[in-house]
Structures are given as C-alpha cells and as structure tokens.
Amino acid sequence: MEDLVAIANIVRTRGLKGEVVAEILTDFPERFDDLKTVIAVSPDESCRELTLEKHWFQSGRMVLKFAGVNSIEDGETLRNVEICVPESDAVELDEGEYFDWQLAGCRVVTVSGEEIGKVRELMRTGATEILVVDGEKEYLIPFAEAICTEVDIENGVILIDPPEGLLEF
Image (cartoon, rainbow, N blue to C red; front, side):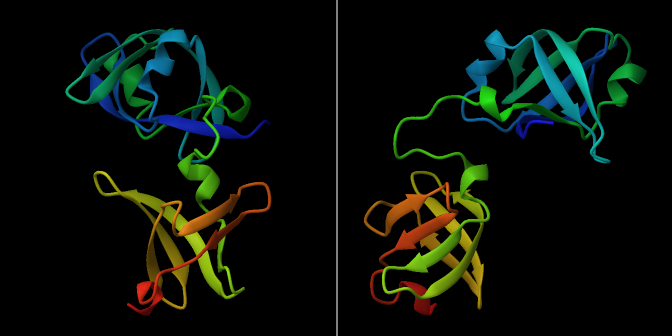
C-alpha cells in the first residue's frame, strides 16, 4: 500500500446520524472540499476506505459524515481512527516548505560534521517553529533558514549552523 498522510483524527461521535468530530491534522483544511474518499487507519493499523458525504467546521474541529455510517454506534467504531490520504495526494508545497512528517526522523548534523541527533517532531510556538531533536539530550533548534542551512528530505539530513550557545543548554 502507498504511504499515507494523516489529515484528521476522529475523537468522538456527534449527533444521531453517525457524524464524527475530528481534530484537524493538516495545515490545509480546505483540502476536505475536494475529497471524496479517504483511508481510515484504526489504532490496530487496519485500513478501510470511506466515502466522505459532507463535512463542516465547528469550534475549531471538523465534523465528518461518511457514507454507511448512519448511527451513533456506527460512528463510535471510528473513534481514534486517523483519516488519511495517499502521500501522492498530499498538498503541493512551495520550495523550502516541508511537511512535519517529512522532517520527523531526519538526522541533524552541524556544518562541522557533528551528529546532533534525530528530529522527533516540529513544535509550533506561535510565530516560531522549533525542531525537537533527540540526541545526547533533547535539543530545541529553531527551524529558521539562518540556522537550518540545508534540508535534504531525500537523504533525511538537516544541516545546521548553530549560533554560539544553542546546543549547550
């Protein structure tokens, strides 16, 4: 099966007709407007295809209605399911932009060749994005061009030029 990208996570049922509430995991929620089918990945990693009948935003979350899911009991079977699309259907990004999942697992190496660790996640703190890197300790490295001088997703390497003191804390 092709690699999948999670775009939502179902957290609970809503209403009597099988609607479910989902946390949005994509920076592009407008992508739901053109979706017809999605892949539902259960916590046990089993997959099934679902047809999206309708969707709408409510209180910062997405309400989803799938074909064949017509009761609270049907909706309950989707709790904790990730809603995914094939990686080939991921939104096209501009040059120099990356998906969080592309950065996770990348090795972080200084321009002098020192191996720092691997990216665990990209943390967002308002206007700033920070790479959380697991190495000898946990490092928090601003994901800024001045520091992250090269991002090579294909080889899984992020080259950094850290300012003095960044790696000492």
